[in-house]
Length: 122
Length: 205
Image (tube, rainbow over all chains, first blue to last red; front, side, top):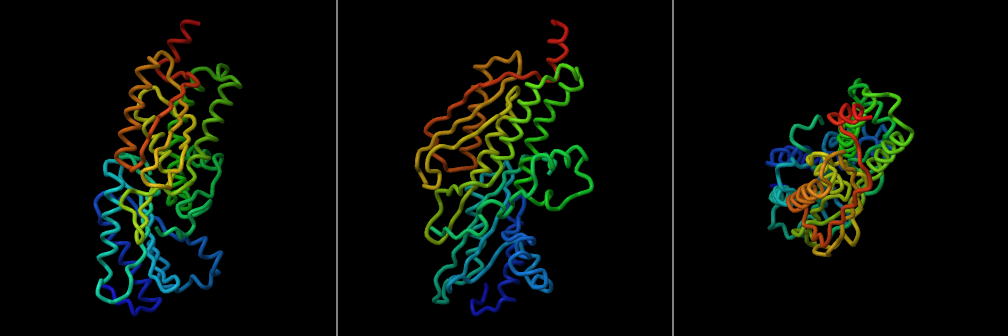
């Protein structure tokens, strides 16, 4: 469970741990960075990226106006069912947060951005 | 529902920053040297999958008879490639039924169009031209219409091929979306030759 009295480093570490959790879910074929490195470099500058603790994380975990927001962009294997996989990803993310902190539930977005055929050359 | 999805517009997450020409060149080079901005982009990968399909149809044509590839053929291939590039864009977010105030579970419109193209790839003799989702796909349960244009391989039964394609599309959409498809409108707007038919037609000529 994650302690919600977090720092930016905590959020970065949480994002990285979520990467591993999501990739282990059956039917998830891949995970794409919510905020690609090039986009971050354009917004924050290359210097800000260097040494950034969460630069490897593909899941985004941020606090927006006091609400914790989690975004994950997934690719789903064609033989799986996207709605069920998205729900499984949502459940896995939600389970990482305690329900007894008094803080509202995090806002979670799971986007299926590709369905990958089996035997694809991707 | 949470609507603050970062980068859901053009050039957003998984977006493809490369044009059709660049991706075609990349394919022709057997994707070497590897370009992570293409290899790691689902949108680019979706375009590459479609380009492979078009190439598998166009290459035998060219090899059979360079002179037979008319300007019309070139325009046809170019038109399909332009559709592929345009339709691979992420587009609107289409929610799954399980979405609620705290959870936005969605599939992108570009992915759904990719499913339709994939159904075409699995149906012998079908090449998808254009695919349009008409209606408010952003509202769960809202009936929508799907308009698809296809080219059918020469010599195939149009009725049988379209029926097979229709089944493939319906099955794929049922498996991967919660869309309520009120109508699937398939227009056959062209015929094309496939590799095993080129010699046959040439012999007749």
